[in-house]
Image 1 (cartoon, rainbow, N blue to C red):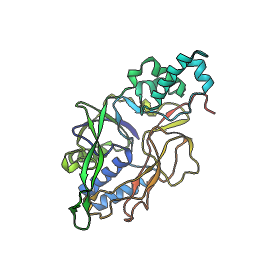
Image 2 (tube, rainbow, N blue to C red):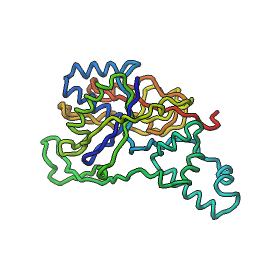
Image 3 (cartoon, rainbow, N blue to C red):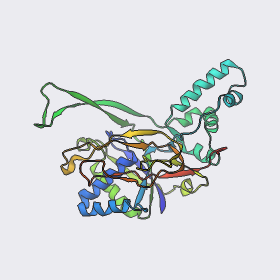
Image 4 (tube, one colour):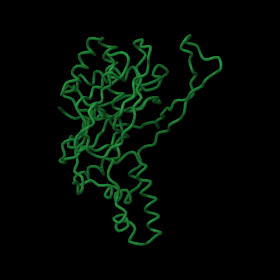
Length: 318
């Protein structure tokens, strides 16, 4: 299967983050809407096999990957390397900057390529100190947008008001995102992606949100996925029913998914499930079973969580 990078250029605000599991769901809905129930059922069956038709990353700011979840720098080593022993002023300054690094969500792709043969948080922090501005992705702005609560018994706005708020992301003009894809039928994937781009992505797409244009990057170097290393960094929302053999450093979270209402589904809520965030690193990628079933009252509804990972070597890994 080949690896590809797609440049996503937002044309509007997004009410739903471009994360891999939601992208899978929208692509499946696009097939159902475009080609019918039998076509999407066949596609889901292929995802249930050991050879999915494609694997997706989440979308990241162009030129960045998620910040890897790595062991922290030991205190004694931090003092020796960055604080010059017992210099309290330097120590406080460096600890403040280290705290700043720990808050960042993304790592420059250039730094990843330079360090992936022996990755550690110490090396990342050293690179950060050399050029902190390189670690700053193009900024987007998250705002809270008010909505009226609807009385489901009558499909009317509640008489007493009942506002609720959702987060909406606004991108600066010209902003671009990177989406990584592994597929042996890229033409088929692009057909579905093109349909989704025309109809919009995520919540409130009928009011103009979630629209974008895309292109395949002809200069993408696949060596990102072909490097040597016995560790894998996750670029996707990853989940599986089998967690007994998970080994690595990771960020778990509870996913509360929803079902698109376009097919008349009356219950919009999926059952919550445990997943691993982008940037989690594994000795062994969790699996199998990356098509979660029994996540909704309708048994046909599934959650696709196939991960896409990049290899690397951990410095002094056991």
